[in-house]
Image (cartoon, rainbow, N blue to C red):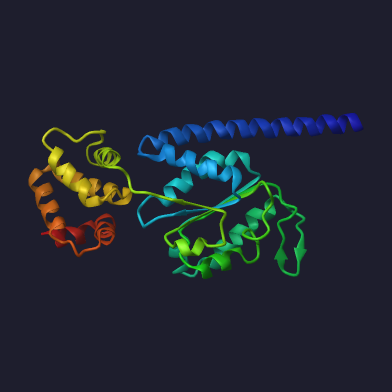
Amino acid sequence: MCILYIYARDESLLIKDIVKDVLQKLLEFGYSNTTKRLVGIEETRKHVELLLKNAQRIGIWGIGGIGKTTIAKVVFTILTPHYDSVCFLENITEESKYGELAYLRGKLLEQLKQINPIGKVVGTKLTTRSLKKALIVLDGVDTLEQLEYLCEESKVLDDLPEDSRVIITTRNRCLLTNKVDEIYEVKALSPEESLKLFSLRAFREIHPKEGYEELSKRAVEYAGGIPFALNALGSYLSSSRSLDKDFWESTMRKLENSPNVEIQEVLRELTQWKAYFWTYLR
């Protein structure tokens, strides 16, 4: 019976290893395809992963549209096979506007319980001492109240198993004080990276089309190295039939003459409400 038990256990471990290996290859394939459309991500990803080797909790901080969520998703995708349980709670601030924080907290607790089915409960709270390895991403947290509410029962910020990791993305650096071990600040893209990203969106190429070099340079300067702005503006400008230069010129002139309009608000309207934005530019 002992021999059979050992054999069964070894076979179970082998199957688990095979599944993990296949999952890793599938994720790497998906990652390589995804990153073809991203610019400047590889160096950032490596930096964040290096921080996670020695820090249990890290914060990814930067202004809106700078790429915090994208970075977190890429790192999460790569690291997922190495953890027993994973949980990515996306866009927490937006979800909180619709009263979804309780749902997100429940989702986090369920993911943690999956690798600790018996659980160790004190009162109504689940302790995490007996958990294995968990990878948790809390994306788009903007207030301390949101963070504390989400983590109150799971204690992921206070009582984390040694090999587990937590990533928090936020616009609010103060939120991370005494909550994380390391902070990674997301910087704007360089002019070269910005032009490449804009061109990929506007022309489906890594360089501007002939005759559009100056217009593309103006668009890149206006976007200020913010990936969201570059993607949104490139998408909007390329929506004109046959890449109408007059349309490009008119759009850029009106954007450049509106210095008091917050770029991210303008481009958010551009992305979500093209009809409205068209009226605004006429």
